[in-house]
Every structure is written in structure tokens, then in C-alpha cells.
Image (cartoon, rainbow, N blue to C red; front, side, top):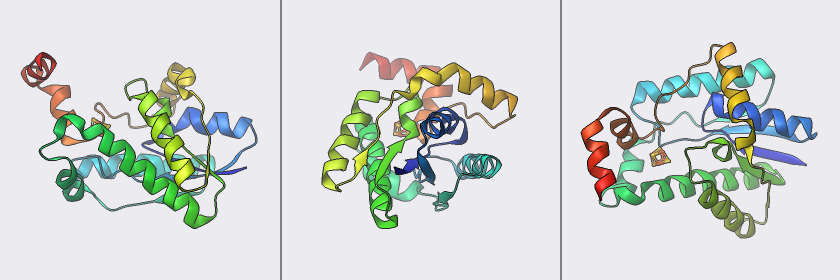
Length: 184
Ligand code: SF4
């Protein structure tokens, strides 16, 4: 099976790549994340993912466009549901890329994170798999949570402190903002 793996960042790619390689899957990575802000943070995560893929010898498609404006246009006035837009946009672009480049299958490192809506990500991927006639490879990559954290530290990789968008950055650092959101 040849598979295109959507990669949200370097540290989250460690376990999924290692698990897929152990199963003999031939894979390439695809960094497409217009949800990462601000610009310096985007560049840093892009660089980390790029360096990691080179170190381990995985071919990687990198979308280097900073997507702040497009992302905001799609979530403004519906900020509470922004993650659904964010998942679908990234996963649909991955399915389209997989189709265009002749991959049989796709998957995503978003299935590694304990902080994401795992069920929703899986369901969007299953839908896209039918829509684009592609195989979706599902695995609960959260099983490798701690091992990959340890490895990313050993490798001195940059580990981001918040999910990605400017809203999640505020939630991470602004206690009052977080409290008000929880009350909603
Ligand atoms: S919190 Fe994370 S998943 Fe949700 S919209 Fe922001 S970057 Fe995307």
C-alpha cells in the first residue's frame, strides 16, 4: 500500500510514521496546515517537520503558504465550530493531493493527538474516502502518545505549546478568556 500521511507537525508525526513503517507501508508526508498562526510559529513548525522528514528519509510535500487570511475568512462569526472547518479543510486537501499524486490510501497524524476530536477526524476521513475513492488507513495512534513525546525530547525537536490557530493561542495563555469560554 502506498499512503499519503497528512502531517500536522514534527512531534505528532513520530509515532504514526514509525507504526506505518513497521507494517511495511510505503508512505510520503504532506504538510498542509493553514491553521497555524502567527507567521513565525508557522515557519517554525514547518521547518521542524521538514527537518524531521529529511532525518528519517521520508519524502514530503510541503505547502509553504501561510494561510491566515483564508482560515479567518472561513471561521469568523462561527468561531466555536472552527475545529470542524479546520479538520475538514486539511483532510480534504490531503485526499485531493493523494488522488492527484496517485496514492491508494491516506491518513493523518491528527489521529495521534489526545487533544483533538478523534471521533470527528475519523468520521470526516471515512466520508472523504468514499467521496474520493481512496482507502483511508485508520489506526488509533494515541497508543504511542508518551513514547513519541519522549523521542521528540531526545531529538530536541521544537514542541509547540498550543494547537495552532490564534484562538487556541489565546485559550492557552489567557486564563480569563478560557474561563469565559467554559461558562458558555
Ligand atoms: S484549535 Fe486547533 S483544531 Fe481547532 S481550529 Fe484551532 S488549530 Fe484547528
